[in-house]
Image (cartoon, rainbow, N blue to C red):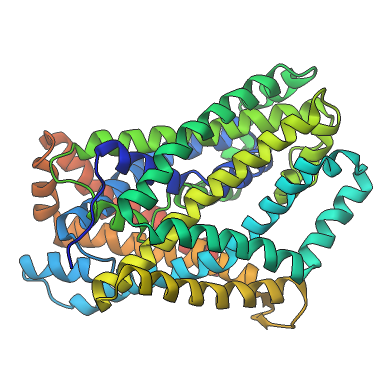
Length: 462
């Protein structure tokens, strides 16, 4: 079966950036920013991007581009060339863990995608602007307790995703990203301009530009490690979710990426678009929340409970609410496509299935997982494991454990075993200095494993 490829470098960049720009940027990043001191969180996040995530992103894409294989067999293909041992273990922790994490992501991601679609329809009808503050909380609670609403809206997202992926890499994944990404950033810029010019938005801008050092450990009682550790682990977890690291997505997209195109330029572009999306989301939501006199530390409800109150106070609130939830809807689609494609690629490449059959298989498996998550989260069926509903459990396992273990596996694989073929592949399209090679090696051998180890430690003992 002939392997598909992206038609252009920008097709790859926009598809990978679309994968990264999703609910993690627009929904999760702003409320974490509010909870961890604004600028303090942003600075820690940017340092993590530079010193941990950048080399890991280069490594993951390079593993895919070097092997031209799926997330499981990629380790075997490269490992056999350098006469590595225990290839089944590398494939298990680096590949099958990634596939399992991707399945769990799809299962709970379609639930939140359903919330986004529900609020987009509410904004379009104008109903969202007629609900008072008390009833907004009740509205969100009603949504999250209704299996039928969550199931129907989530299934619409699942069907749209399946139709796009079934069209293939170029006509489906790439074409959708090329059209949607410019629209996304136009909406981002329009909403940012409006939010930062609101009466009272200056307080939000001041919050984002002032350094609250207690979140960096410098408290009135002296330096304390715990606040810094909590900020670091929150920022590290967010960075992995935001960049789609550790789910095999970038590995698969890398396998579709031409060996002739400059990998460094592509990674820088992806990181630029992703970081801009995260920061623009913050500059949309935080100033607007301050302008409305609401709390920025209200957590996950910021997008679905607090923001509708802001839109109610704006002239043309229906337009602004519709624009925001359209932004969230489009960003969600670009993310679900990438997770879906990663699993489809595994079935096509490893099990020699045709794309249509692979898409139908993933759709059925994802439907089963999503249905179980929706039933458990809504309370329609009492399904709990370790005292957690399936939504909380899958989110916890995927973002904290599987992504971290897969990324740790990638770092050790490239850092200790496969540096030569990876650097050789990078050199086919870009100049690689000795300084970068040392930085790449030190990061993957020591810095990234230390950061990932801390994240695992925090997850196990917190």
